[in-house]
Every structure is written in C-alpha cells, then in structure tokens.
Amino acid sequence: MADTKIEVQQGDITKIEVDAVVNAANSSLLGGGGVDGAIHRAGGPAILEECKQIRARQGGCDTGEAVITTGGNLPAQYVIHTVGPVWSGGNSRGPELLANCYNNSLRIASEKQLQSIAFPNISTGIYGYPKPKAAQVAVQAVKDYIKNNVTSLQRVIFVCFDAENLKLYERLLHE
Ligand code: AR6
Image (cartoon, rainbow, N blue to C red; front, side, top):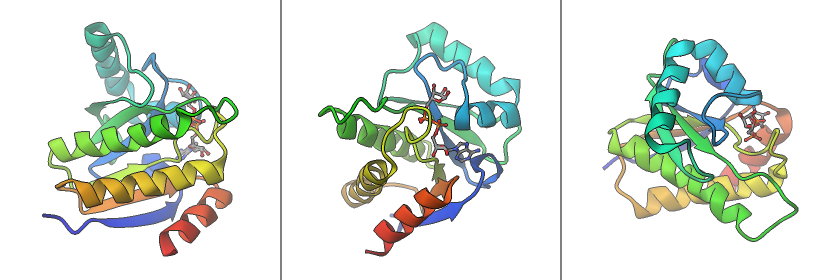
C-alpha cells in the first residue's frame, strides 16, 4: 500500500507533471472559463472530444461526481473532470458536495492505479465558494480518503493559483 504524501504548490495546473490533473468543470463537460478553460486550451481538442462522448453516454456530470479523459497535450496523462458546488451562502449540502469531488476523483485515480494526482482549488473561482471554507473541506476530504481507503496514490498535490489559497493550504497541512 502506498504511503501517500500530501503536498502543496503554487502554480498553473496545466504545467504539472503528474499522472492526473483534476479539472474544476461544469456539468455540461463542454468547457468554460477559469482552470477549465486553461486545461482545454493547453490540452487540445482530444479532451473535449472525450467529454462529448461521455455526455452522449451519460448526459454530463452531476455536482460532486467525476469522470476521466485523456490528458491530450498536457504533461499529465489523464484529466479527471469534477463539478464543484456553486456557493449559495452556506447551504448545508455545500461541504458534502465539495468533499464528494475530492473523494470521487481520488477513487477514479485509485481504480486506474495512478500514483500522482493534482487538484486545483475546486469551486473557489467562478463558483464563489469562500477559500478558507473550501480549503478546510479539501484537506479533510483527502486526509480521510487516504486513511480509509487502499490507494495506489503516492502523491496528492494541491495546486494553488493564488497566494491566498497557498497560505491557507500551507497552514492546514502543517497543523
Ligand atoms: N491552474 C490552477 N488553478 C487555476 C488555474 C490554473 N491554470 N486557473 C484558475 N485556477 P475556477 P470553479 C484556480 O473558476 O470556481 C468554469 O467556467 C482559480 O484561481 O476555475 O470551480 C467551469 O466551466 C480558483 O482558485 O472553477 C465552471 O463553469 C480555482 O482554480 C466554473 O468555472 C477554481 O476556479 C467552475 O468554477
């Protein structure tokens, strides 16, 4: 069983060399702004093509769920697309749905026997989830997953785009 390490980095997730990067997608799986736009731009049309096939099969992706495609031209072999919750002032299902994004992505990576995965700060951009609350859910979800599941993953990397998220994750991971 892997002794999984949790890491934090600041940067652009499209440049990270890991087995899978996670995309903060929307339920259409057809792309958008933020990290979703960056991943499709850098990864090229093969990613969208597979997303369209998944859409044809299962009609998109619900909030908290995840699907996997090729990484196209990215350094990562795969992209795991997950759909975070839209912040709506602290409704009770927000944390559960956000935790599901992390759990389902880790589960898919483990099923594929992957060794490394990189997450963006899901929901904290266009979807408006407060960064401190999202960071707490993300770190707890990953810690719980590693504790409670057998996984091939050796590295889980939180890739923070902005300094505020970087600080939050560093603090939470060093507690
Ligand atoms: N690398 C890493 N993180 C990034 C990058 C990047 N290249 N670009 C942005 N971020 P967002 P959401 C950070 O808005 O809130 C899209 O239109 C960003 O600073 O990308 O889950 C989708 O199609 C923020 O911390 O995703 C959906 O419609 C984090 O990534 C909607 O946005 C997430 O911000 C999803 O909104």
